[in-house]
Image 1: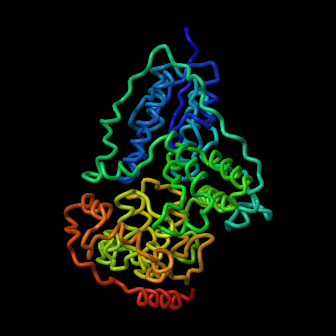
Image 2: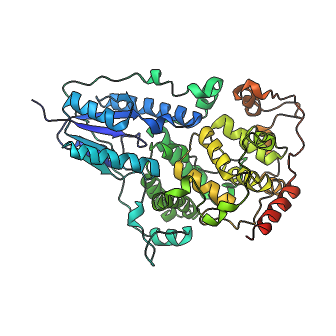
Image 3: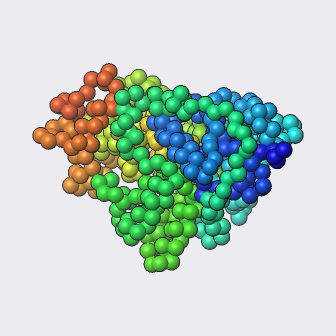
Length: 472
C-alpha cells in the first residue's frame, strides 16, 4: 500500500517554480494530488478576473501534465470538497500557500481548524508576499500606517532566493474524479468580449518570467521617466501575473536588486512598487475594514453619492465623461482588463472628487473589469485616491484630467489609441471597444464626442466646497 497522499490545494499560486508548499509536498516522499476548488470566493469574482483565472488554471493544468501529474478540479465549499477528496483518496495532509485578505484568512482559518480536528495535517506556507504582515513591525510597535517608513524598514531585509520547480511530482496510484474546466464557464460573464480580452492576456508562469526578463532588459533603465506616460510601454505589466501567483514577488525582488547592482538606478522605484503592494496587504491583514469601509473613520459622514444609476456614473463607466484622459483610461480597462497607473489615479480622482461619488462604486467596477484585480491593492488604491485611506494624497488634491493629459500625453498617443469619435481613421484598439461593450449601451465610433458631464474646473471647486463644508 502506498503512503497516504498530500492534497496540494492551489489558489492564487498557480505556478510550479518558487512554490514552497508544492516543493514541500513533492519532497515529502508521499504522492501529491494537486487540487483547485471553485469555492464561493471564486464564484464571487467579477467577469474579467474570473475569466482570467480560468486561463491561469488551464495553464497550470498543462504544466502539471508535463510533469506527469494532473490538476483535480472540484466545485463547492472548500472544506466540504477537501473532506470529500480526503475520503476518496485517503490523503493524510493538505498543503496550501497563505493568503492575507480578510475573506481568504477567514476561510483558511476555518479549514485549518476543521481539518486538524479531523486528524488531518493542514500546513500553510508563504509565497504570496515578500514579508508576511506579522513579521513587519513599526519601531513604536504595531503595524505600519504609512508607506515610507515601511519601505525604509524592509528595503534592506534579506529575502530568500526563489526555489526551482520540483523535478518530479510524485503521482498517486489512482486519481480521484475531476470536473471539467469548460463546464465551469469561467468566461461566461464576459459574453461577446471574452475573445478580445483574452487576446490581451499574458497567461502563465512562462509568460510571466518572459515579461519580467523583457522589462529588466528593455524598460527598466527608463522606468522613472516612462512609467507615468500611458502612451508608451514603460511599466512592467507584472501585476497581472502577480495576481494569480504565476510569478512570486521575491523573484521580481531579486531581479530588481540585481538590476540595481548592475547600475540601473531606476530599479529602486520598481522595488518600491513591490513594497507598495506589500503595504496594501499589510493593511488588509491588520485593518481588514479597508476592503469594505473607510479606513479613516471620520470620512463615514462625508456625503458621497452612492447611486450607481446616476447618469454621471454611467458616463464614467462607459468612457463618455467628455474628459479624454478619463475616457481613454476607462476604455483601455474595458478592452484589455488593465489600466495604466496614471490613468487609475485620474479616473479615481474624477469619480470621487469631481463627481463626488463613493469610492466603493469605482472599486466594485474595477473588480468586475480588471484582470489584475487584487483585493488589497484595489481597495487601498481607491481609498488613497478618495482621501479616506492611509498614506493618501492630501484629500484636497484634485487631479485635473485636462492638465494631466497635457503633461503626460502631449501628442495624444494614448487618447488616439482609445477614443474613436471624431477621427477619420480610428485606431483598431479604439474600435475594439465597440466590439466588447453591451449592445444596450448603444454607442458607436460615429457618435459625437460628448461635452464634459462635469467640467474639470467645476468639479474641482465642488469638491473643495464639500471638503470645507464638512470641516476637513
